[in-house]
Image 1 (tube, helix red, strand yellow):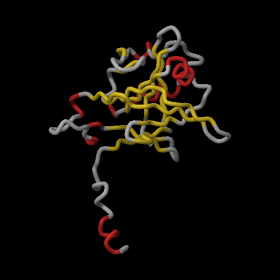
Image 2: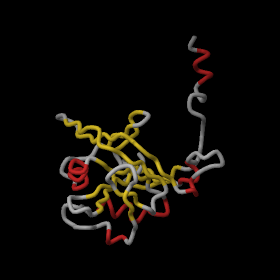
Image 3: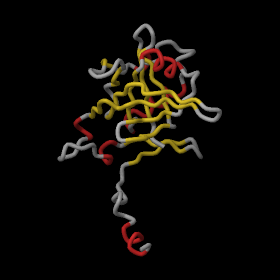
Image 4: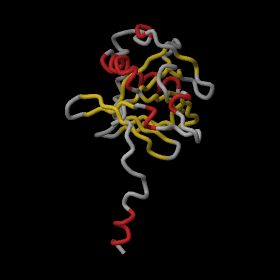
Length: 179
C-alpha cells in the first residue's frame, strides 16, 4: 500500500500531518482515505473541509514514519519538530509539505461512516510535483518518485520504482483466448 502523508490545518492554522497506509484513488478525481474518526488530522479535515495527500519517498522515510508514530492528539505541533516546510495550497485551505515530491490537493467531498468503515473522500483539485520526478513528457515517473509502500504483513517499508508491465496490455493475450 502506498505510504500517504495526509496534511490539514487545525483550528489555529497549525499544520498537522499523519502517515496513512490505507488510502487509494477511487475515481479520476477522487481519493479515499480509510482513517479513524478520532485522528487529529480527521478532525482537522472536517473543520477545514480540505486536505493534501503527499506520497512519501525513500529520502524522507524517517519523517514519514515519525508522522505515523506521533499522534497530533498528544503531541501539539509535531510538524514543527521535523524542521520540514509547508506552504498554503493555492487551491484548497490545506498545507503542501515542500519536502515530499508529489502532492494531491483535495476538497473534502464526503465522510462515509458505516459499522465497518470510516472513510474520508476528497476531490482532487490539483496535483503538484517536484521537477525531479517528472519525465520528458511532463508526467510523473514512478521510477523517479521512489515511493514508499507499506507491507502490512511484516510492518516494513519498501520502495516501488520498477515498471514490470503495461496496464491494459499485459493481459491482452488472455483476452484473445477468452473469445
